[in-house]
Image (cartoon, rainbow, N blue to C red):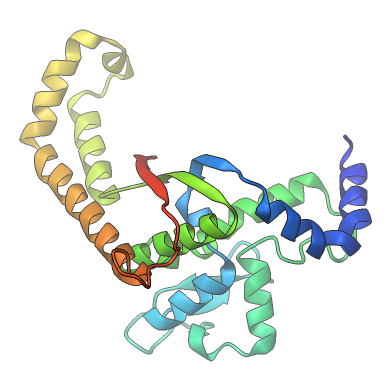
Length: 244
């Protein structure tokens, strides 16, 4: 289908969107097997979480018309050209919603598929300060479970990265030890590589990742009041984590 026909179809069904959305949400959807956690959260939630963290917002260096979220340089102090997220006015909040999602992307007429592709992938960097904060992980996972329950999804296989800095450091050390790319295609090298990683602290990083999972799940259970009569969502829900 040519992109003009695609956008024409979207425009054609716009008047029926509220009813269509309600119907589609009620359909049983089984499992979401390729779920990128950071892409599941609504932009409004990222704004709320970032505001609570004292984060800042300002122009995206690559697309100045769009906003990006950054950490404060010191508590309550933003970099030049940025301001506290909690101080965003109504107009700025609307632009934040556009910057962090596909909201109103095509409102000004037919836009190329390439532009839509670029906007979609750019959003991940713009809300990365919020989505990548360990302090937000419990809230984000809780939101995912609530949204999945509301949309009649009974199982989610969520992909997450644990101890990313540690994993990157181990990878750098391994590349220094084995600079020849061909070494990684020879299975005879794997035992020695594994022993080297163990000596570099692999077990400690695995233990730290396990603690992360434990803490995240505890935070989710507390937010959703799991194990109590007031639990949310009220139905049983299954989810697992996958390393991405």
